[in-house]
Length: 233
Image (tube, rainbow, N blue to C red; front, side, top):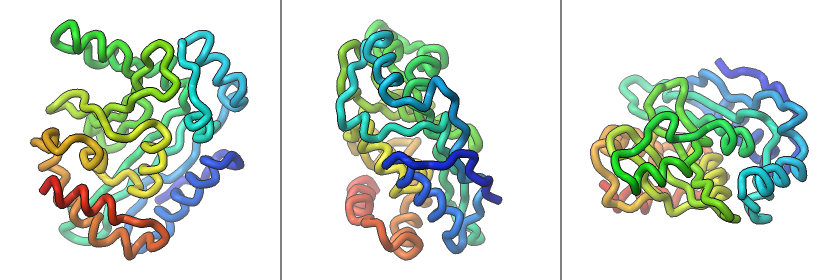
């Protein structure tokens, strides 16, 4: 059962996210645990102040492209699974407000790394999308390197650790709206060499996504996702 949104969404990305949440709730054959935008707080809702804080206090003078994907709710999240008997398809995303992610969600508090290079990397990574409901341990990470205007995005799973993604932060958010957070979609935007045990555990669900999503969500184009999936199977 889906939760009602707590926030009236008005900024461009917020409106697109609201449509995606509604698509999930209204899709035939999906059992939806939640699909909601959380509450805002005064410290999170003013874009100019948020980006000033990120630039001055965190060393992140973020680009206009990143700023164009700003959202005010502390979380935008959904958790669902296919209602078809025997289906392996499920999805979850939990997008954290960018200021909260950078300030609070330090990856090295969870995993420090095994050598100096990894420790340096994990010290810069902040998780902004994870799967708290399903508990998969998969997370999307923003690399908060000092001076970064367009920070790198990495993907973490507990088998392979952190993997660089081909997507930037705006591209990642756009992809969430299309994929609806189907489990493991991020592997499709990492190098095929990273398609190991973690990918194997979600490949059946991704194959089902490639077959069913064009019917469930006909306003989105899944050609690129299908191509990437075929390259990794």
